[in-house]
Amino acid sequence: MSGPSFAQSAQGYVLEVSGNVTGQVGIGQPARVAKGQTLVNNATITTAAQSYAVLKFEDGTAVLLKENTSFQVQHYTYNSKAPENASAIFNLVRGGLRMITGLVTSRNRDALKVATPLATIGIRGTEFVAELVNPLYIQVINGVISITNGAGTVLFSVGQTAVVTSSTTLGGLVPMSEVPPGVFQMPNFPLTSVPEAIPPGNPVGGGAAVAGGAPVGTTAAVIAISAAVVAGVATANTTTTTTHH
Image 1: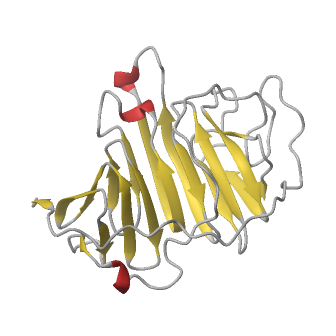
Image 2: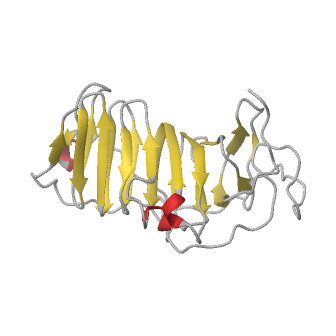
C-alpha cells in the first residue's frame, strides 16, 4: 500500500483527546495523536484504556470514541455546494462509539455508513451509540438506522436497542436489561452537529505537514473526564422493518 497523500484536503480533525490516543494512515507507523490534528482518508484512530477521542467532520458529523476503540476513516467527502455527492464510510474495528450526523445525509440518506465485522450500520440522519464486543450492540438515540449483513436489512428507530450476534444473523431488538454492564458507557463530552471549517494542521500518523501546519505534537492533551454514562434509553419498542435479501 502506498503512503498517504497529504496534498489531499483534510475534511476532519481531532476535536479532543484524553489519555493515550494513537493514529496511523494505511499501514504507516502509529504516532501519538494531539488535539487539532487533521484526518485524511484511510486514517485509523485507536484509543487505549482510560482514554478517548472526539473527531469532527466538515459537514458537522461528530464521533466520540470510548476507550479501547479502533476507528477508521475509510472514505469521507463533503462539499457544501454539492451535498448530493457527499459520502462517508467509516469502520468500527473494535470498541465503542457515539455518533451524531451532520449534513452528509441531507440529500442522500444512505450517504453515511459505519462498517463492522458483523454488520454495516446505515445512518439516516440520527444519533446512536454502538459497541462491538462480539456481539454488536446498537442504541438509537435519535432518528433511524439500518443494520445490514448477509441475512438482510433491519431498521431501528429512536428508543430501540439492537443486537447483532453474527454476520449471517439479522439484527434484533434487545431490552436494556440484557445489555452487558459497561456497554454504552461513554465519557461525558457534548457532541454537536454544527458544520465547521477544518482548522489548518498536521495529519494524524505523522508525515509531512499540510499547508499552515505546525510540527506534529508528541503528547496528547489530557483533560479530566467523568465516569458519566450515556443516558439509558427506554426498553426497546417492538416494531422493526425487515428486508430480506
